[in-house]
Length: 164
Image (cartoon, rainbow, N blue to C red):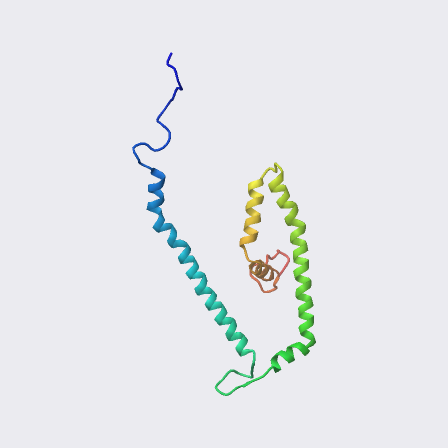
């Protein structure tokens, strides 16, 4: 019987000074470092475009009438919006819609998330896929589909044999 530790397989660690991980890091270093810079540049470019558009909208909001060569600057547009009773009706409708949408989303979303993540629900993959599709599809697209579906002139509306 040989004395001392018994080793099986190749020795652990780099032999003859060759470090494969270091070589892979060096070969990927130039490629990986470019991506954050490109993404940062794209983010800055889009931010500048968005801020410029918002600035133009803000500037035009002070113009009285049409923004042509001759125009006057005024706060009258803000005063007329603040004094219009319809503004507050629309604001309350918007807040009511937002809170009721949140309540319905929480009513279905929290139990569904709990069932998918914490239980052995059969069909877990299907439920998870449907929840993801709900996130990806914009709400206005679903609303447009419902409006088109319920419209009396829509071709998407099913007709029964008794309707003429």
